[in-house]
Structure formats: structure tokens, C-alpha cells
Image 1 (cartoon, rainbow, N blue to C red):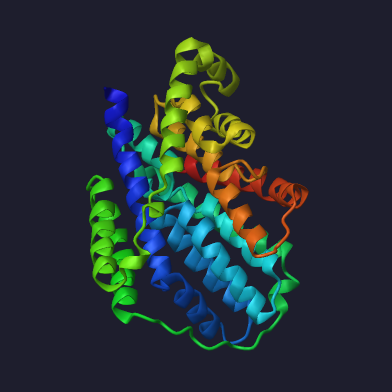
Image 2 (cartoon, rainbow, N blue to C red; image 1 turned 90 degrees about the horizontal axis):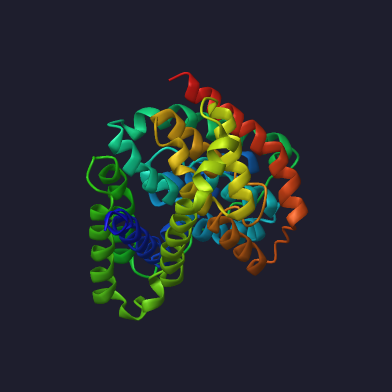
Length: 351
């Protein structure tokens, strides 16, 4: 019963925030934001990239890494194609920031939402522990991107026209919901509530203005079922000795060792089951919990299956005919991952 009570709010949040993101996308919120960024950058790729960095970071923090990786990626890739600028710069910006910017708030990643239960049991403020490593992770990611793609950042482009918005009521309504749920998520209210209210508002608005956009496919049924199954599998393995094995591997004192173990697990089997399996190893202390989150959130960027968001991002890249091979992803990840994990753990130790 305790397991059901714990995962139910997470699954409700996952459904609600997915509905919000999908309907906001249909209202052209993200497309307009990307094009406005192109206007503000005034023809300079480095300015446009910095604005995409801000947009990707904000979307990840407020609407979760899946929103950034899945919905923003096709928008920025289409924008890159229309502007005739290198798409890989923007592709890696979205997927890397989807991972490394997902530390700050509980709503930014499903692993964080699961960890929130432990933070409450420890009577610790999640944000008080997360803000230093979160800032460090984002800054390191931006620096690495700038170094790896410095030639692309020197390019220029012709400023495009702003896209036409078919229904301004839907656009501004969806924009308002996206802006308002951010403060609601950090207000201390159980995050499933503001997410559910925001989703309901948009569903009603679309029912009145564009009923054809409402379909059962908006609900991520397969993802919800997958998350529930992962809970069950990891619970079974934990009851049969997995916890003791992971405790020996991760150790009991070094936060960096714990983060590295979490990162290895995430790249082997996906970050969500890696977190679930290792949670008991880290649950004695808020800093160890954050070290684990650093590992599974920021350290999962070596393999294309390191997180569900990365898999979905790859499919969007394929659809946009942007080739990202496993080797291309791995060698860049081998540069970023050690730096971001080490830097974030160091920032955590300063708290």
C-alpha cells in the first residue's frame, strides 16, 4: 500500500505534465518561442544558441526533461534547417540540457519526484540541497557545448518571419498555463495538483476551441505502464539481495563514488531503474540522495538508452533526418559526463 501511495502522485504528474506539453505544442507555444529567439539573436548563431540554452533549461526545469527532449528538439531542428545552420549544435544542446538541467526542481525529472519522498522523510529541503549542483551542471554543459561547437557558433543566418498563430486564445491560454505552473511547482504544494489543474484548464480550453486536438493518445499510457513495471521489478530485486550488492559497490562515504555508480547504472539499464535500485543505498542523508541524482540525471549521457528522454530525442532526430550515431553520442558524452558529474558533486560538497 505504501508503494501505491508513493507512485500514484508521480504517475498523475507524469500524465498531467505530458498533456500540458502536448497541448502547448499544438497551440504553437514552443514554435513561437523558438522563432522569437531567432529574431532576438539578430542573425548571429551564438546569440540564437544562448537563447535556446535559456529556453531548453527553462523547459526542463519547469516541464521536465521529456518536454525539452521531445517537444523542443523538433522545433529547433526545423528552425536550424530553415536558417541553414548546423543542426547538431542544437540537437546536443537540447538533449544534454534535458539531462543536466533536470536537477533543480522535483518536477524536472521523475527520479527527482521519487527522491522527494526521501527528502521529506529526512526533513530536508530539496531546493536547498539541489541549487548548487544544478547551477554547476548547467554551466559546465554550456561551456562544453561552446568548446565542441565553437566553429558553428561563428556562423550567421537570415532572420525568419514569426510563425502565424491560428488561434490566439489557445496560444495565450497555453502560454499562461506554462508560465504559472512554474511558481506553483515550487510553492510547496504536492506537484500533482497544479499539474492536474493546468492540464484540466487546457483540456477544457481545447474542448471549446479545437476539440479535434483532444485524443486518448495525449496520455502516455505506455510510459505510465513502463514506470509501474519498473517499480515492481526493482522492488522484487531489492528484496532478493540487490541492495546489499549495490551498497558494496557504491560505498558508504564518498559522494563521488555514489554518483559514478549511479551514472554507470543509468548508462547500462536506463536512469529510472538505476535510481530505484540505488535509492536505499543513498537514503540515509540528503547530500547522498542528491549525489545519486547527479549520477542518474547528469551521468546518463553516454548511451542512447541512458534515459527515456534520450531515446525519444533520438527518434525525433531521425524523423528530422539528423543522423546521430551511437559513437557520435558516446564520444561527446565521454567529454561532458566526467566533467559535469565531478563538477556537480564538488558544488554539492560546498553546501
